[in-house]
Each structure stands twice: as structure tokens, then as C-alpha cells.
Length: 338
Image (tube, rainbow, N blue to C red; front, side, top):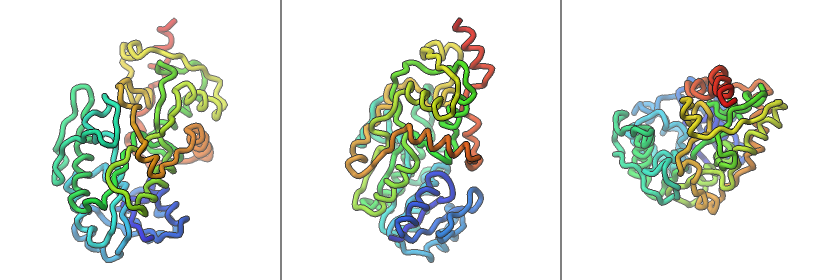
């Protein structure tokens, strides 16, 4: 197999490139060369995916059996269309890393792979879409839905869309799991979102990478929800964070209404906490049937702590600073509970 990875230097893209090499595949990566280091053993091509000239230069390194696009999040649909159109003549398939945010019902309704998508033109610019008063839908969701449509216009039935919710694991740059781990290590009373038996469905980055490569090789098409089929309760999640870090802490389970009264921001101040009914009701059965295999989330927690303990450093990203409640705010809320 010969594949092109758009991105390929950090987190998911890096894992994809590394595993493809272990499979004995020929790997080309394409990125601007500004963040992360190129994986040893790949053919690294540096350029801008929004530049017609750079894309034309890239095509000279083909052909490829498949393209795996891990870097479309920061680009509007028209730029995805530009790249997909330019590469169609030198690539057999396109595997697109998308998101569950493309669904109309996200995060209010349970989702299947056949749930309706947001409507966005394939040639839309970055101004298209809106964010609802309650935080959904989002401009991001519209933009990613338009990106999917752009790929379909270029690749048709040779397009595959992976729609993860939350991806965790060693190398995470967003900071969700690292925050919980460092908070557990600090110990003491830990503000925790009730109900404690709420199941969450984050998926390990390495499992997403393997599934993406399988789809690059296989004959499937269309969309796949990529979420952990079993998940883990918040109780077990925090317990494992405490166990692996050796933190002498104890979660204090606080109702959503009380957290809201104190202005605790869902999704960011207490990472992975969100009260919407559909946020952790994502059906990934089609992906499982197509070969998605998810390791226990406890293993993801253990391996992420091992990475942090070995001085693991993610690529700098502005979203890291968004996650985690301030120590003073957490202490004030805990004190108010008596």
C-alpha cells in the first residue's frame, strides 16, 4: 500500500504514519512543517494545502492507493475541496477524519451513522454556519459537514468519513485526560460531575489510527461513528486516574444544577462532562462491524500517565489552556457544599 497522510506529525496523524510503516506500507506525509517532527521513514513533503501550486507539486510524488486527511479541522470546505479535487487523479480513496459535530442532532439526540447531517455547501468559506444559543449546532460542525460534502464531490463512493467524538491517549494536545490525571495526582477532594454512573465513550488515538488504516485498505464507503462501544463510568474513570497517579484524592459528586449555579463550564472546566442527552449516546456498531477494536479506556488512562511521567510534551495548542477548572474556583465550590 502507498498512502498519503495530510498532517502526519502529531497525535492522530503521527500514529497513522507510524503504524502504516510497521505494516510495511509506503508513506508520504504533507504538511507545512511548522509543528511536530516528521516521522522517520516517511517521504515528507512540505507545503500549504490551500496553495494550488503546492498541491500540484505534491501530486508529482504520487500516485497513492489512499489519502488520509487528519488536518482539515482548521480549514473551510472550499480548501478541502481544493485539495480533494487536486488529488483525485493520483489517489484511489480518501479517508477523512471528521467529527460527530457534523450531525444535526449533536449533542441533544442519540446518534447513528444514518442521522441527518448539517447542511453546508462544498465550496463554503470560513464564514458559513452559526453557533446556536445553547452551543449547538456550531460553526465548527457546519464547516466539517461542508468538508465531508467537498470530499464526496471529488471522490464519490471512494470516500470514507470517520466521525469520532473525543479522542484521548498519549500525545493528546487538547488536555482533557492530562488535566484529570494531574488533578488526581494532586489529591484531596475532587469536584466531580454527578451522576457518577454516567458512561462516557472516549476512544484511544491508537485505535482510531488502526481503523483509519483499515479503511484506507478496505472497500467500505460512507460514514462511521468512532466511539468506544462499551465506554466507562465517570466513577471508574476518576478511580483509574487516582490509581495510576497514586493520588490520595476522593471525588465529591455534585449535581449538574449545583455546578451550573457556580458557573462551571461544561466540556471544558470539568473535561468530558456535558449534560446533553446525546453526547455519550453514539452508536458505533457500524464501525465495530467494519473492524473497529477499542482497548479498555483504563489502558488509555494508564498509557497516557506513562507518557506524561516520561516528560511527554504535546504539540503546543491553544485548546490546552481551555481545559480544567481553576484551583481556587474548585476549592470555593467544595467549601460551599459544607
